[in-house]
Image (cartoon, rainbow over all chains, first blue to last red; front, top):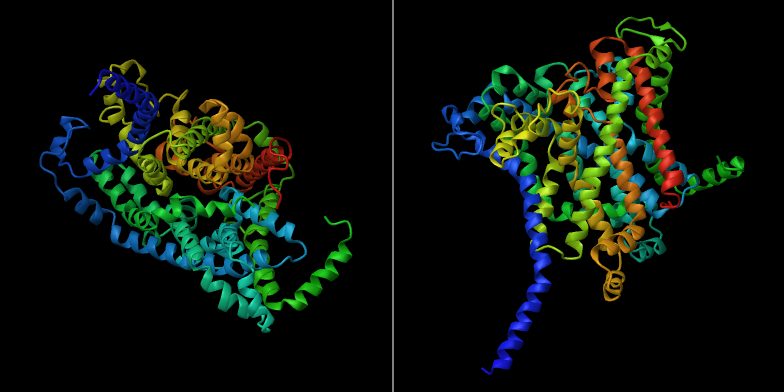
Length: 291
Length: 307
């Protein structure tokens, strides 16, 4: 190799480094950030499998004799089986209700131009943005009047109705991306609105429905205020309310117990997150919000 | 309202006749549900704010504006209000700005392995705030907590505070924890938004020699006004509804210094059985959210949406 080629090669490597250096620095920074977000989660998982006597080794010490005993204790102590069942019931049925209530309105707002459309959008935004606390007292009163206070069905109805606005927005956004030409043929053949909705739009909206349902499922699984206020008996509690017990002296003094409880409470959502990750975290569903 | 209401009504009837199914299930049913479950509760809250009621008794006593007068002199109301505003300030400064920076860095490929960062930051969005709160109670524990030991190990022990005991900083601790769980949302919104900006816009700026700072401020942000409007509104309402973390982590301690309006409503109504006053504070939240939202949409983000 001639000396000139070596110099040239070095020059190229240097240039490449100069191009890559800021990117490498930024990546290091990104790793640091990722650690801020993943660190606490990892710590909790590690803590949850440590036996009691290892706590003196400090929070960062890896477990020497990992054990699943904390999981067993907390599962039985909090009756996690019942809590999970309730949360699962609220999340599946509440989301189903929200999506089914939202389907035809989304169809109406994406395909038609009903007079007063503006006001319907204004209503939707109110429903989306309304802080829950402002309606807590009347809803409480209303559920009591309907004898639905402290019942599973009462909470499901509330979740369904309050999930509807965001579902309308998501599904409408999805339906507007379906090309009009597809239903034109059906229209010419004299299909009714219902037939177009049922036979054309609904099957094509399935991916949107799945995204909407998943997001709503997560939202209900996370929900706390409504469940806290509208439910009284432990038998009806979802995970979020039931796991408040972890913050009592009985559990919080041994860090492995609340940690195990935390991990348990998050498992169904973590599974869903992995399954639906691509659809949700790409932010495609957001297209709908931008009007 | 419309300038010619009669006109609108006839055309609505005409529309309804032509599209019975769509009108019934697409408009009438949802609007009726709105009226029952959202409209009526708002009106009822306002009505109740003029009464004294323990939540159980059959009779409610009309007290005029007494609840509002009481609120104007209630120290806890002001503490809560200011805490909500502090929460909003932290949320705009930390999750929103950071979310934008990360989304930008990922879209212009300023970092390797963008998916790792995005996944890490988005995951807590799916967690319940009860779980997040419990988690940080453990991590910020003054004796066994990981955070303080980390600071000590890094030689930053002088930074250690009583994160929940010191009333000067307790609300900021909570707001930062809230921000940790919230950052993924602004990030995802900006990520989607920047993805919609034509790539050529960035390339052109790059060729003209614009650095990242100028690209962000002069190219990305002006194009992202609608996204920023949505994100700021979301952050506003998220801040005004702050409740879960307080209920789990501090319950307003020390001495009500970490109360927020949403928690005050809950305390006064469901613990102190003062439903009338609880409703009054609810009305304050409602007025506050409408006022700030109107200000934002009318002034700051004028014309950002055209529905």
